[in-house]
Each structure stands twice: as structure tokens, then as C-alpha cells.
Image (cartoon, rainbow, N blue to C red; front, side, top):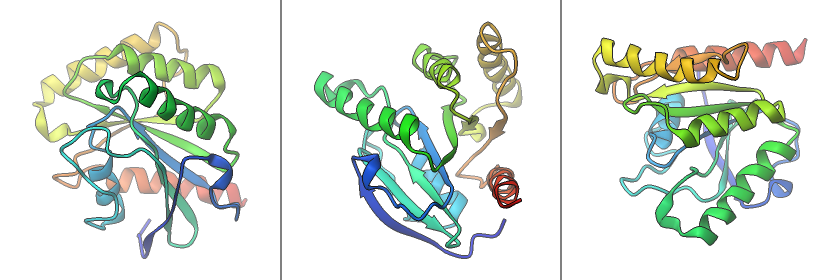
Length: 200
């Protein structure tokens, strides 16, 4: 897929106020500081489309970007940011949960995991929750340029092994590096194929 146009459309805290034109939506989510904004900017080839920040927890809204006037890329708030405080975390959780569970246009959720870390309890629990709720999602390992091939393989296998304790079939897995522009084609081709299948 070639990205010809990528434009910010609207931000919301309420999924009911999101666009109602029926375009498929591909949402990106992950723990704070996982590299979500950098990945979105890489995918769209727009350097400042999604705001990047060294300060975790920057995204606190449901952000819609219209791509090629055909589908939406949705930037969701990060989860599990401790410094937000209990009330702030609860507010973000409600925004995320209501969008994921009630947004009919959500076609696939891209769950970002920082490959440098061993399996995190919060990520495993989140994936298990998605599975229990029947939410279609894929796993995207970010920052693969930061690890040796051996360390990357070890961490990925640890995640897969953790999932296999509960899952019969592991969701699709992608490997990305925003810094080295790795993995963009794989993700965009995956989205393009789903879009074609929807039209059939």
C-alpha cells in the first residue's frame, strides 16, 4: 500500500463522537512510551502527524487520521501510566475500553510491545482481555533496532510462551523500527489485504 494522503481529522474522549462514515478503523495502542507516535509517523511517512514526546502518557484522546480517504488510523491513549494517578488512569481506561468494545468500525487493533522488555504482566492481561472479548488484534514489536538478533528472539519467544499458556492460536506478529523504517510495508500490506477482503 502506498500512502498518498494522511490527515488528522478529529480528537475525542467519547467513541460516539467519532466519524460516522463507516470507513474501517485500525487502532494503535500500547503502554506509554512504547513508540506509538513514532510508528504512526513512520507508517504514514509524515514526520509530525502524531505528536511524539519524551514524556510518557502524552496521548489522552482518541485521535482519528484519515488515510488515502479510505480508512482511519486511530491513535489511542497509552495504558498503564502510573504517574497519571488513580483517577486519571481510570478515566483513560474508560476511554480505551468503550472504544475497543463498542466501536463497530474497529477492524483491527495493533497492540505495540517494546521488544526490549521481558513479558509484562499488564500487556499479557490486556491481550487476554482482548481475546476474551473477541477483539481482533495483532502484536507489533517496536524498537527492534535496539536489540541484538539473539536478544530479540529471546524476548519474543518469552512473550509467545506466555500467551501459549492461554491461547491456542497466537495473533499475527509484526516487527518494527521507526528509526530504521522497518516493518511499515508489512503492516500496510496487512491493512490493505483486510480492506480488500471487506469490499468483497
